[in-house]
Amino acid sequence: MMLKSVTESFATLIHGLKVGHLTDGVIQRSKRMILDTLGVGFLGTSTEVFHKASQYSKIYSSNISSTVWGQPDFRLPPTYAAFVNSVAIHSMDFDDTWHPATHPSGAVLPVLTALSEALPQRSKFSGLDLLLAFNVGIEVQGRLMHFSKEASDIPKRFHPPSVVGTLGSAAAASKFLGLSLTECREALAIAVSYAGAPMANAATQTKPLHMGNAARHGIEASFLAMMGLQGNKQILDLETGFGAFYTNYSPKVLPSLDSHAWLLDQQDVAFKHFPAHLATHWVADAAASVRKHLVRSDRDLLPADHIERIVLRIPDVPYVNRPFPDTEHEARHSFQYVACAMLLDGGITVPSFQIQQINRPQVRELLRKVELEHPSDNLPSFNTLYCEMSVTLQGGATFTERSDTFYGHWRKPLSQEDLQEKFRDNASKTLSCHTAESLIKTVEKLEDLEVCSVLTTLLKGPSPPEASKLSSM
Figure 1 (cartoon, rainbow, N blue to C red):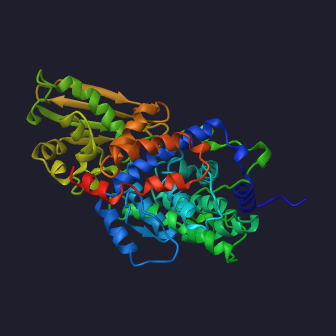
Figure 2: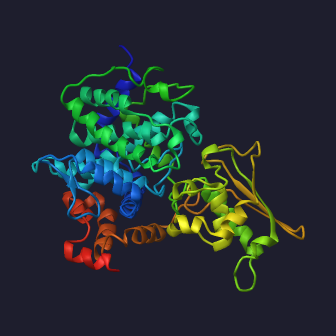
Figure 3: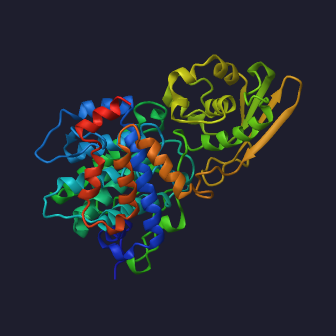
């Protein structure tokens, strides 16, 4: 009997996984991911990049439409609703992060909320249908990243959501839409031709488009596969196929469904407690510890001119090495800025990345004193990296602290209470308290939900009278 190709084994996984394959652990972890993703998506609707993406998307219309999260009077065709909601999710770099390195949820969840509304009324999707398709989309991303050592490290060439996220989106859409085995394979082939965006656009307004395009293109790949469009039947087997995105690409046929084990059961995600690149969270943690040595009795930091030198011992990650960031997006990708902001303020929050905060004279003065060192044992992997920070004062005294794991990392997960509090904070500008609490309860019991419309109705946000009350707050 001829062995399956890698591509065929992925199509079999997408087509063949059933609700009965879901484990309690995967259901619980994925519900946390869904709640967090909704919250950062609601927060992201306040950003300039979301505004630009949604204004652009208004040129598209069709007789089927889906909700733009938190916008009760704004609907778009499903591909573009998924696009703008995914842009919102990644607009502040506040979304979840996995290992090997990618942001797994942002390319998948908006696809499913958009499709659940857009399909004919006879298609009633349950909460379990959504959880299964969501986890298929996550699983496909993880499996693909395990085929290359390059994917384990913080990326250098391609932004992972634009690569594996596009295929995860196509996989989730294919599962949700009930594509045949052949159509699932074609959707993957089509999605590979939509994939890929360069890391040079990190720390710019364009980076969130990588997530939006992954969501949109995954839906398009699935729709085109349903229409019979064909691609290379071995797209995941070939170096000139999916292997084009990774060095040392070594794909393997997946185990049979009978012995399927979810990667999410083995490897949890990290949840961020401030909106910046994940690697900066180790820096913030170390800086918070050093700060305890530097505060005066009034809890203010020693004057900046008392500090002579700040050394950060971190991995060599060029796109997060930004000595003097000029924009919010650069500041979110700056080891140096996060270190200085934490030293000065004692905490990092959503407003920490506003331009007036970045341009404070005290921040600029401290930034001039920061040096980076890259110890040979500090590799650019979210699973092993650390930050050691030393601050030397004018008199010569030096204080050193090290962070190996921050609160929110998979080794030190956010409590359910703190995860829900993050959601409330992020949703508070867009949703009423009542709607936010209803969403928390709905996601908590997602596996019991008979129809997804209960969820998507809440995602619309406030009714017009409520909206005017919220905007005046």
